[in-house]
Length: 343
Image (cartoon, rainbow, N blue to C red; front, side, top):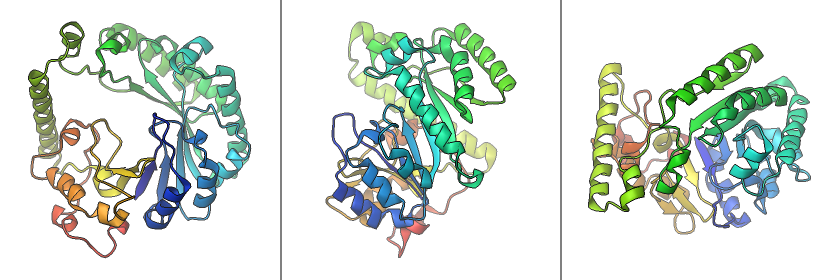
């Protein structure tokens, strides 16, 4: 099982007492722990203490970071013993671009921190050396610098560059979406692929053009669409379910969400979500129920059942993550079992 622990963008920090509960109730059943998703984990007041707790356990950690605080005294020494993967978010190769996208960041400090991490990483034995990825969110603000990011990642010693589209859900940000400039995208992709091959660097590029939610451009001109927007959301959910079902028929397998059966997202305020995708529901709070009660509770059971009965939660229906091998029957998850976390 994998647990993802995140902070929030509103300034809420996970209390040490809550993390200690996670250590006691969740982490004994976890093989991988990710500090990631919302906010910047490394600036949390108790992050070094979190790492001290984790280093007493038999698990692997992951860190998703903007690399602005990797220079904190003692951080790398505590981070590296259990680290299996570091993903550094770097949305450009030039100081003006990076500092415009990430307000308050210092490009030179980010590079220094990544160089410091790489030096500490390669000093470790190869068997315990963590993977190092650069993640880039592609938009009109930085697509021209994609080949430069590939070159920079190679210089920093990264193993791979992983790119994703900027997903626009606010009409005011529509101009940042690359959906309208496919020619520019393909030119930069071709250049980046050729450079990555020459440098021997892994490069993951999104396969399909970025999607813009239905009605978004109209909303920028006409405002909120009310009931029509909700009907379109339901239509998108139905279409996504039809695509998943078509895949099931072609493959002979069933769609299974890796989160619902083997991963979980723990918020800084104690809320528990089944995943970290947009529109995810809360399924409980560790301040009110034990994790085992949440994991086998009615909310999670309903989400799992929805993947089989053709009536998934709206967030599940729109999600692109849920295809995988044939899962256990849903009935196995509708009753509490002795050790559900170990399954």
